[in-house]
Length: 350
Picture 1: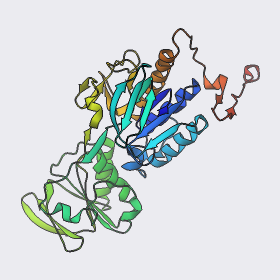
Picture 2 (picture 1 turned 120 degrees about the vertical axis):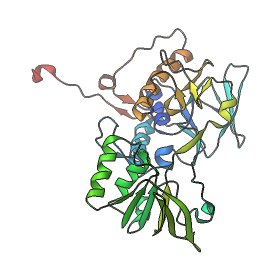
Picture 3 (picture 1 turned 90 degrees about the vertical axis):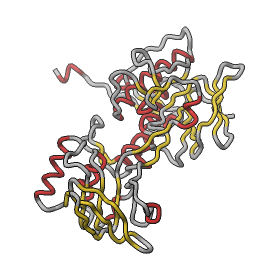
Picture 4 (picture 1 turned 45 degrees about the vertical axis):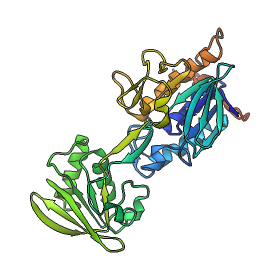
């Protein structure tokens, strides 16, 4: 039995930052994740993709963000159960939750923070007859290592942010990038659409609309695709076909825990502390929903901080918790390490 103050289900950015906020309050955390390593979607889906909306970082690669978060929480020595999925939830006589994984590992905690992002997810696949034949042989649904496409001809299908972002990113790596979409209008951010148009005008990429891939050709690997362009068929020689039509999220076994679910997300009380309908169970990050919800990493960071302070109060009834700014208190880890806050002489500034 693994015992901890807060059991965090999900090891993405929000889950990792929760360890830091809890550590400041001297609360011990254990992370449970179905993936084999911490990082969530940032590691599993787009480790080399730049992120632009993390405060203090004009641009940071997703994988590097995870490295920074792991470095930040290292002094608090969290526990990890990786490669296992949270399966069942029950209460014991000590009024603690017992979460058992698909491999039989049991975790005991009075506080559970579900930070599972989109949950388990599978890519939406195009309806092509011989698609499975070429999976991992020229057809990819996720881009983990952009260098894989160096000096290759890549055809990306999709009209959302992911398709636009990767078209822009791979334009400096691949021999040629072709973006195809079944409509003339794209659904992505305006600046991304504008940047794609600029690259098209400069001849650095090719954009085909309205068009769609209707069949794949090849023997042992993908050699070419047949494209319908406004009613006319055309064969295009490619090395890779990457359909980016989004992901189908699933909450998995968590959906059977008695939590209030709305549109495949967990409903929480955002006016207080992001607690669910079950006292002691919180949901933070992309996995939750509430009026005005923004699915941003920075929103998850905020929710993590609020959750930890609420959890402290539940674990320490009647004990006053005074918020201490790290600029004043510094950071003291469970391993005995301490980063002292630097004192500033205001008189010298004035």
